[in-house]
Image 1 (cartoon, chains in turn orange, red):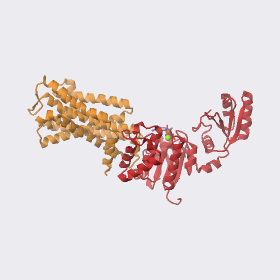
Image 2 (cartoon, each protein chain N blue to C red; image 1 turned 90 degrees about the horizontal axis):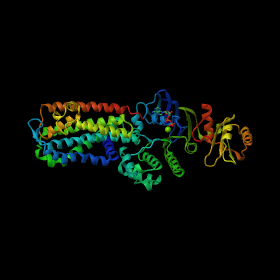
Image 3 (tube, each protein chain N blue to C red; image 1 turned 180 degrees about the vertical axis):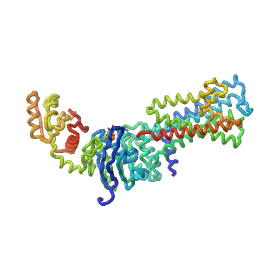
Image 4 (tube, each protein chain N blue to C red; image 1 turned 120 degrees about the vertical axis):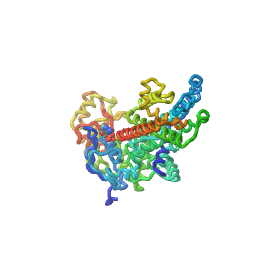
Length: 254
Length: 327
Ligand SMILES: Nc1ncnc2c1ncn2[C@@H]1O[C@H](COP(=O)(O)OP(=O)(O)O)[C@@H](O)[C@H]1O
Ligand SMILES: [Mg+2]
């Protein structure tokens, strides 16, 4: 069997915390089925671009799917963190693997969690979003790109945090805190344009904004000229974060 | 099997951490099917040496060839043919014992039927039946250590590094493990073994390097170490009153005494010295003055521990070494 398949399989079996995975799926569904519908009555449908009007529950449902991306991404940090805490990091590096293979296997496992988790939430949310989901090749590619780059960014971000923060408590606390910062300065809950100006500025740097916007554009066929720009920014952010993570990873002392 | 290329050839290998020289120009060869011991107190540089030889740490200077491969350039080839039991715990936390053995075998690309066969064999041989389905996170430290050892035997290897593998094990399990290692050595395995426990080194090793403060002080067979440093004797005595801090203090500072420890469970004092004939009268003299009674006294057989202490203290001046409790 291929070396990556073996390592990814191990990461998924050995380092996944089932309780938090469950929570990661429940959390977005809660937004979709409770908050989205709750606010539908007081928020009129609005234009998300390209003249596409969607209801708030639809808008939020799409955001909740990308929320899974950031959640899945933090798993990358947790996997590395568990391996370091439990002495498996060194153990694997003394086995027939390279450091690059090990870290890539974590990224791959994270992609599986992030993308599979998003698709799962999407399936659950289908009763809500399904009616206005018009399949197109362009849309599917946008959705795939959003999920891919989003997961890579947040996976790499979590790996960097996990390297920088050695003790368990700090890693958990800081990653939860970062999670909320990303969440509330993004377009998951409301369009960036209707946020306070400070938040709006922050949202322009926030990859979750782009992940969510691109995902929505793909889902509702609402791509505009800014969508490709957003895709470019997200890809660059993901690539930069990936490089930072690799550099951080190489500095881990054994 | 002398005459073949050595399994490990280390030349002037050093590791510094900032100003601290953890390993200082060590050099040795290890032959196939040999058990080579690294014996030294905590902080001597044993783990750092293993981390370098297993490619985890870059040496600061020096060279090594392992299984014919250059340490600096062929790390991956080396790692394919070695096993390592680290000093620190290592386990997959989301799995039970059997599954974690299986997945470890899988990442080493051991075919499934072979994994199953070896897992069954190892669980039985190392007495792991009663916790074979226990989650690794719930294991006691001794059980976890056995898992860690068993894990390395799921895959093939020519050379095994054991970094204090018996820490935290009860004597029976310890003996089971050491005998298991011996068996595998008879089948051709080479072992690099570190310990600060002398009986273990004596029981398992063909040759022992005594290491202290990063330097190898001596390399020899256990028998030769004992013979060459046999001038170190130990005088053991007991006091009717149990203990006497004053007596211990007086003796520790007297000439010719390299170390004094008291065995906490029995109260027996053990004095390491090259001159028992002058130490014995001194014990009586001090005892009389302090009003305590010596209830038994004898010169004990030279142990490797005595040889070790003599080596370390010669090298270091008066020495506090681990492996005993200073009185
Ligand atoms: N990563 C590190 N950074 C700084 N000093 C270290 C590091 N690792 C080990 N040392 C120091 O190097 C010396 C040797 O340590 P080690 O090899 O662990 O000894 P042993 O295994 O014989 O107990 C000790 O003084 C230890 O404090
Ligand atoms: Mg050590």
